Length: 310
Image (cartoon, rainbow, N blue to C red; front, side):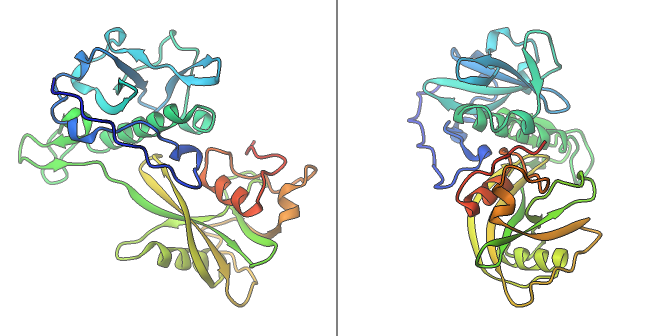
């Protein structure tokens, strides 16, 4: 194995959503050389990911933690392992497998993402995102042949025509629309319970900037024109492969809501008092693992009395 490179310093966002807390070095320059030797790394820790994207966790002194296993104890084909990076001299990888009885519990990213520490959060979102992409790239998009994993899990290669497929991420915008004073717009999708609300969101379309997507989606969903569109922060959301770009925007002109029933079951204006009072019946807000929760609490200037989306 070649000499270790110095670790890249992690980027720290001024506002950090739960899944944007990575502190490990992804060490991308070494993926190709580790393709056949990753499983022999002396200090390797492996995170198992099931076909339904659950991971094993344990209870530690600091609270819930990922069950990261020594590489020599993992019974799966090393050729399919994927390199996640390194931190403090330890290398981390993702391997696919089924649930077993050695872990305290198997949970999904939504359940555990906001509870684990910064290192585990970064490894978790990377592993789940990579697994989701690998499962959606089993066949070559040009000829349909079965692809092979290369570069320690980060490239799918077509043996028939030589096509190389790399992980992709779909940009999506998510926005808290406010009136410049004390109210913001929250909406509810039809598949949610009657008391659950969140900020507005949608995918960025081809040939469109993120800011243009904000203005278009807000108008399409609730009939509002907006101005003062401001980027706040971002968060990966690998369910299956999105990057959520968080914004705030101020309503411009008429504040009457015209709800597109195909997009939302309902939407309304809510004051800060509506969102922070402990005795409220509605709305229940998004869970702390979501960037929507970060946008709302950042706008409120405090955490609401009942933050969990139950």
